[in-house]
Structures are given as structure tokens and as C-alpha cells.
Image 1: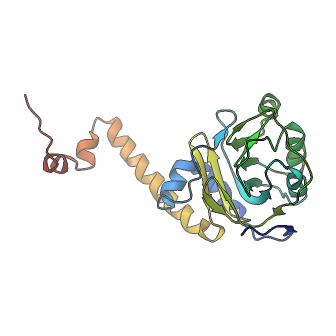
Image 2 (image 1 turned 180 degrees about the horizontal axis):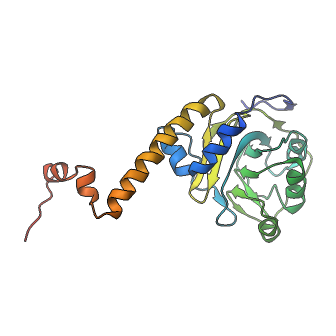
Image 3 (image 1 turned 180 degrees about the vertical axis):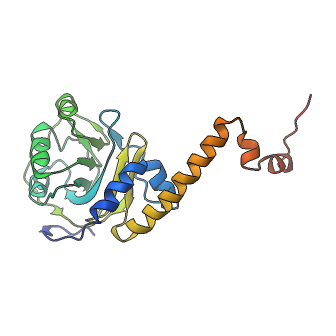
Amino acid sequence: MPELGVVHTKIRRAEADLVDELGTFGSVTTYEARARSGLLSPGLRPIYPGARVSGTAVTVLLQPGDSWMMHVAAEQIRQGDIVVAGLTAPCRDAFFGALLATSFLAQGARGLVIDACVRDVHELTKMGFPVWSRGVSAQGSGKLVIGSVNVPVECGGVRVEPGDVIVADDDGVVCVPEMRAPETVFAARARRANERAKRDELAGGVLGLDMYGMRHALRAAGLRWED
């Protein structure tokens, strides 16, 4: 059962240098470096293309049709945070727009990931405030029911803890647990170096069939090459 009616004002955030370095790898390499875990639902899409951010999670638990806790969350944002919002039940209303984005930016937020809809997309795009959401809706929300801030939430099918690392771009959103950030950076460095070496080979004309040793397995699976 989600924890309701609480705002945790002190959270342990992942180290800033690790967060920023994970951002340079992007969601794909980070996801692979995490042994293919932590990927939020592909239904969460950026509202405009080209956005690429990383940050530490300030989590918000929202009630359906009510954005009250987004305003409460603004007070807990620190420089470099990304707000991650989950809901107690599915809802298609918009919980966020240009006014809240102005407030979030003033507090140092790098973006928003929300398992619901947003609005004011034109203004958000002009502001350069990146958002990953379930969709866009003109239907707004009320301010009557309390939820929580900085508690574990489920967003896009993944449990996100306050202070976890969020890496988001056109390919998706990945959550890295705060305690796993150092090892994920190490694995991502190794993966990027390996990918660069493979890219050089492919650019030189080597086929993936040979680079990955696929031919024997393909023949064993029944594939035939015929003249």
C-alpha cells in the first residue's frame, strides 16, 4: 500500500558526477549496463524530440485527477533533480503545464517523468523543459486530495526511490538505484568502449555475421546459403 500524507524533506541523492556521466551514455547504454533492468514503459514518451537529461529523482505520489502534490514537490527540488510522478490509480488528466514548469525550473529541476498526461506542450517546448509522459490532454486536474512526496513510487512499471538516477532521452527512460550508480557507470564505460571498437570494425566492412560468430549457430538452426 502506498505511503500517503507524508513529505520526506531529507533524501539521499546519487553523487552528481555519476549522475552527469550516466547522462552522457544515454538510456540505451545505461539500460544495457544495468543488465537490462530499470527501463520504464515505452508508453512514456518525450513531448518533443531531442531531449536528453539525467538527474536525481524527487518522487511524487499523485491521486487521480489531483495535482496538489506537484506544488508540494516543487519545494523539495534541488539543483539537478528530475521529478518522477506515479499515481495511485490510472488517470488520463493532465497534471502539469507551463506554470508548474516555470516553478520547477526556478528550483533547479532538469525535467519531469510522469505516468499520466501533461498539457501546454507548445509552451513547454519553447521553454526547453523536457517531459516524458503517457500522453497529452487539455483536461486539467484539481487540488483537493493529498498524496506524498519523496516516497517510493511506481512509474512506468518500475519502482523508483527518492534519489535514484534517472536517464531519459528519445529512446526511453531508465532508473538506476542510487546504490547502483557507481557500478553502472563502470559497466557503461566498458560497454561504450566495446561498442566503439565494434563500430570501427563494421565501418571497415566486417559483417556482424562474422564479428559475432553467428554463422555456425545459424546453420545449426537450419539456415542454408544456396547459389
